[in-house]
Length: 189
Image (cartoon, rainbow, N blue to C red; front, side, top):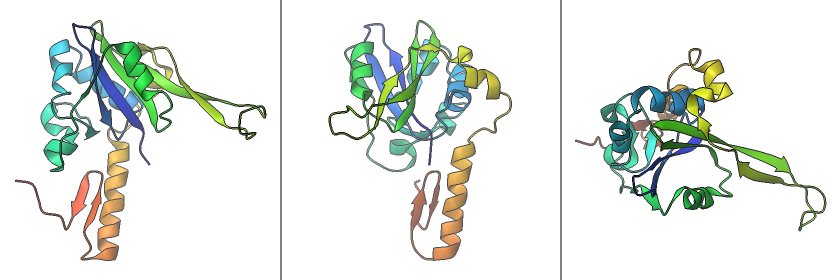
C-alpha cells in the first residue's frame, strides 16, 4: 500500500550507509524531499541517525522514524563495504521500488524494473525478473520532472492515516496502529 524505498549515503571511506523508508518513495515524494532539504553531505548524513523511517519530511524533527517516534527498537542504518555491496544487498527485493544514493554531493535515484521470464524458466512458469536501473540525478528522473509541482506531499501517509481513523471508528476500543496513526496506544512522551 506504500511506495517503499531505501536511501543511502556514500561515506568518505566509500562505505555506504542505508535505511528503509516506508512511504512516498517515488521521485516526486522522497526524491523531492531529499533534493530540496538534504542536499549537502552534513544535512543528508543526519537522516541516518535514527534508523528506518515511516516517512521523510522537510526537517529531521518532522520526519517519522520507527525507533524515535514509534517507540520501537531502532533498526540502525546498515553499512555496506561499498556501492556494489549495497546493490547486491537489495537484489531480489521486489518490495522496494526506488533506491536513493547521496554521492558526489547530489542525490541519485535507481528504479526497480522487471522483465518477464519466458517459458524456459527453471520451474516452467512465466515470471518476472527484477533489476535496478543505473543511478541518475533525482532531478533528471522523468517522474520527478513531470510531477514535482503537481503532487500533494505525503499523499500515501495521509491515505493510510485516514484508513486508521476509519478502523478506529468502526472497531472502537480495539487498539489500532497503522502508518502515522495510532489510536488506543499509549502516547510517547
